[in-house]
Amino acid sequence: MSARKVNQSEWALPLLGKAFDRFFAENGHYPSALEIDSCPYLCTSRLIQLKFGGIQNLRKKLNINFTSYGEGEHRKALWKKAGKLSLEGEHTIGRFLIERYGEICVHEEKRYGEGLNRLDFYIYAKPNFAVEIFNTSTIHGITGNLNAKLKKYIDFPYILFFVVTGGKFSQSQIDRVISQRQADIMKGTMKCMTQECFISYCLQNIQPLSFTIS
Image 1 (cartoon, helix red, strand yellow):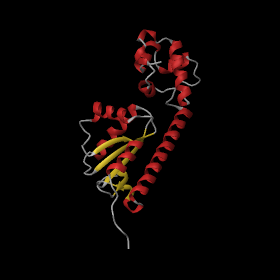
Image 2: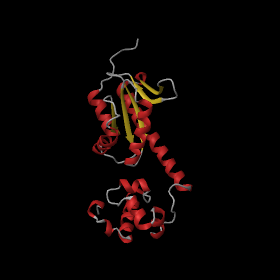
Image 3: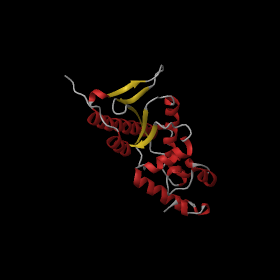
Image 4: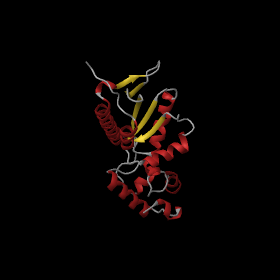
């Protein structure tokens, strides 16, 4: 079932119910508004607003037990899960960087500028570069995180990688988001990549320093 192939008038309650059940089977929870807009087999949240009076009303009609994803225990669970995934992503990237470039060349939480900005990782290599990691499961989340980080690091003088963890994104999806929304403010020294593409890029293009410690 693809949302692109379904006429707006065909989005009746039974069809949406099947789509919501499919999302639940794939993700372990029903979709939020942002997840609805990024899901390829669901209609838009705007259409749900027009036809059913909003997502909370639709959930009631579908007999979903709770109606607000912005309140209570579900919100706490989502934040806890996001925090855990974010830490897991940082640990994975950190282990790779240390194995690739050596512990002495990998600096965590390195301060940048005169404010409170701290880079997740700064690496001495050929050439030097920095890494900022963020976790999101939605396309909207990529845009929001990039907007915030670009404001902080727009004047950063070295290569800076924004590494996306948590979502099942392809590199082409990320590239498309940047070309549509951030292309004008992303400097040539900045790259936004999936975790897999980042690791592959480092292995192929950025060599570790050659030195001995006596």
